[in-house]
Amino acid sequence: MLPSENRLRRREDFATAVRRGRRAGRPLLVVHLHSGATDPHAPGESASPVRAGFVVSKAVGGAVVRTRLKRRLRHLIRDRLLELPPGSLVVVRALPEAGDAEYERLARDLDAALQRLLGGGTR
Image 1: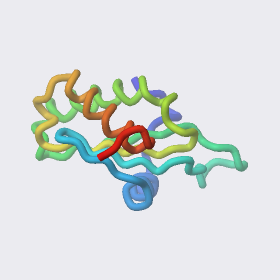
Image 2 (image 1 turned 30 degrees about the vertical axis):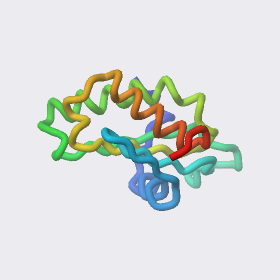
Image 3 (image 1 turned 90 degrees about the vertical axis):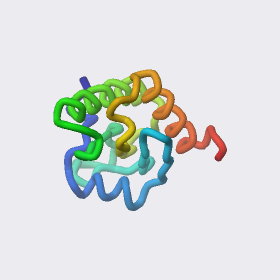
Image 4 (image 1 turned 120 degrees about the horizontal axis):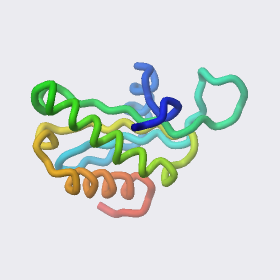
């Protein structure tokens, strides 16, 4: 389970990550990362924790498939929170092929996208 303080909930935060952040596409996922953003809703100037949100449309599958995929993605991103800069906003958008993909393949695509966004990979 992804801790509450690491969840992206506000529409404005999703929009910030998607519009102002960098994007890396993979066959199953598109990952948007807005690095080092301070939380405008938090008091003080300290960097907020990394927050992640997920977009899984009906094109991925039925409700059961979408819910299972969101759980898998939350679990995957939870294990990678420490690799991301403090205050980052991450949005993971699942593509239709992700609905029936294996867990290991989702993990590989997520790792490859994050590595590219963090400067470790080349096109």
